[in-house]
Image (cartoon, rainbow, N blue to C red):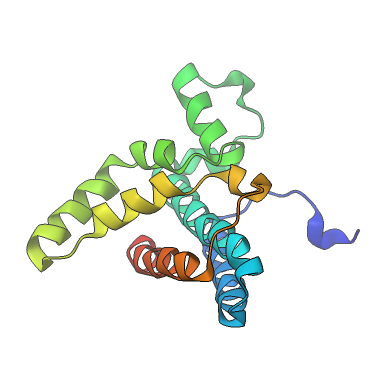
Length: 157
């Protein structure tokens, strides 16, 4: 195993780069049209949103970029640290970004869009446990999910 797989803390800009690369991977698999690849499209699509939400959290809680260990943090800050560095729960991350949600709601009202609804749908549908599921999705279902991820991605960058 090379250095590419080394565990390291990423900056928000690096998380956005990773998000784009995983979206490209999901798109490539989607274009294959093979139902056997649909679960991977779902998984990668959700991971895109996870990376973008973590980038937003690191921007909101800037000091977390420099925290080595959570042991000296307050209980509340430790929860944030765990969401950024250990968790994959999109809904919990979204709860920690109320200002972002508020800005999206205001833009929805102003522009007649459905940013908050689309983001909530993605966050509700995706779970890290998708990587273990023996159930199979269809590529048609994966395409719909990936369309939502693409929409959400624009608003999270």
